[in-house]
Amino acid sequence: LMDAAGSLPPKNMFNSSGRATPDVAALGEGFQVIMNGSPTSVGGTSAATPTFSAVVSLLNEAREQKGMGKLGNLNQFIYKHPEAFTDIVKGTDKISRYGGTFPYGFDCRKGWDPVTGFGTPAFAKLLAAVTE
Image (tube, rainbow, N blue to C red):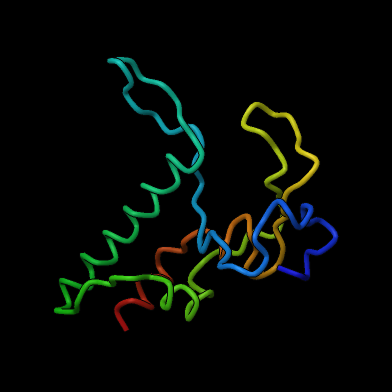
């Protein structure tokens, strides 16, 4: 995190001594859902979180078929296998959902960053790692 010091918000706007999030990311734009009986597009965390959860469900199914237990808490696994994610190195969270910009925020960078964590899941690599 401190490698990105030039782009950090003022210290009073985030907890620099606590645990940072996220651990991972997923593309979450343009998801179609039914709201009040009509299709509508949603995005952001409300789309990315169930996407990643579905990936984990598929990984657990593959483990079950091999007689292995469920993954459970993923943090140790994620930090042990950063190669199982596509690192996002370009981007920022200084953009509002309506296209405006914010003066503060974080930028993507090589390795873990506070915008995309370790990156997006690379399913084949994740599958290999969880079934080894």
